[in-house]
Length: 144
Image (cartoon, rainbow, N blue to C red; front, side, top):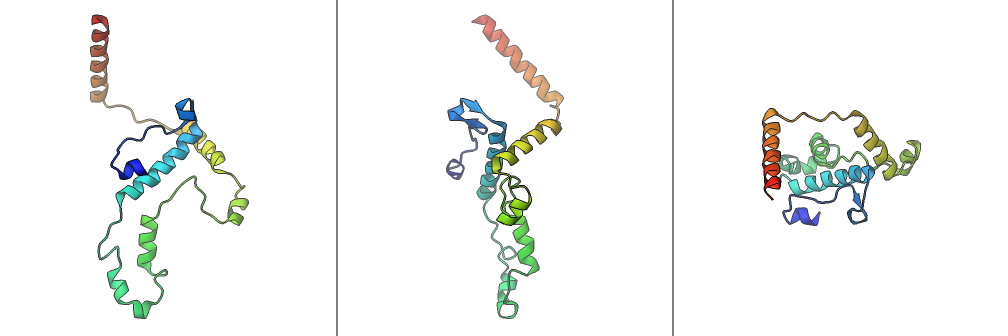
């Protein structure tokens, strides 16, 4: 979080353990979730009359319950972090779902991704540029 707040746009080490000596699919999935949450924080909060519910606040003496307002539900659903792996349910619900810990859920998600992910093919322009970079590097290597 701190490097992101300071303006860093590169995070080194997702998936790494033991100072980078070990790598873990589960850790990568967990780190990805944390990075997504950090990115959401970095976006900041949109402060407008609509997001601050100015019209509803003006009616506070009549409403008396902001939590049940359509506006509250609409903006809470849009603004709140929605992690896939971090379980925010009550203990009873968590136990009913099998009492899995974060590492178990991360392992299942990593396996799902490995099994189902279809990478987007590189464009012809990108392929061409990569070939140019490789050829240039090969020429430099021969010259040395």
